[in-house]
Length: 226
Image (cartoon, rainbow, N blue to C red; front, top):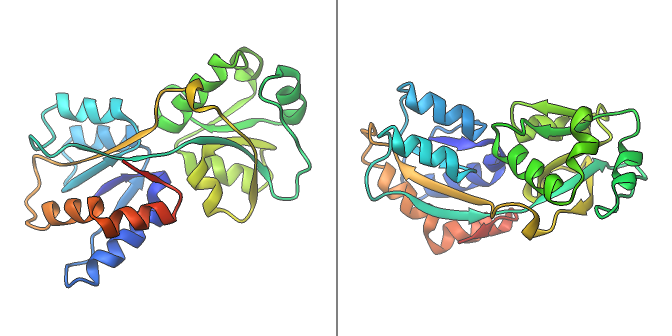
């Protein structure tokens, strides 16, 4: 299975719970949805794709890589601004000067805003809030959202934009602001079986993710089951 980086803890818990029901343990590869979609288009062997971005799922669909009729919206999320746990930073997203002061001479860590879903949502929100022009030159773009989180955890970046679920999974950061839901496109994670899948278990695991137990596990990690 190929899945977005932000799903690491939640999806591993899903896989473990499913395996306890006398199924084989799923093998999951995590990366940015953009990178995974490109791998799929290049013929990477996998059975399921769980994307954090509908556009990259669309790309896989247009390439004929998805099994017809299996694509489903699965989860929702939100994006937040985080700082290292010990930081005293405060940010008012309605004031450009507030964000600029909190970044100071450092960098704003975020996933690649031109390609990676978390980065695209972050850029959209900053643009809508009229903050992007002030911070664009200070962005430290990463390959995926977990890499952005790591920069803040280590103190290499004073602020970062990540999913609310990423922030909840880390004891090394704290949320300093939450981006309004209306400031960016709805965050939708979708799942589909790949056309090249040869596993008889793919359909069963996908159904498990949408089951009452599967939804409860995702909710425990802060995701919003759809």
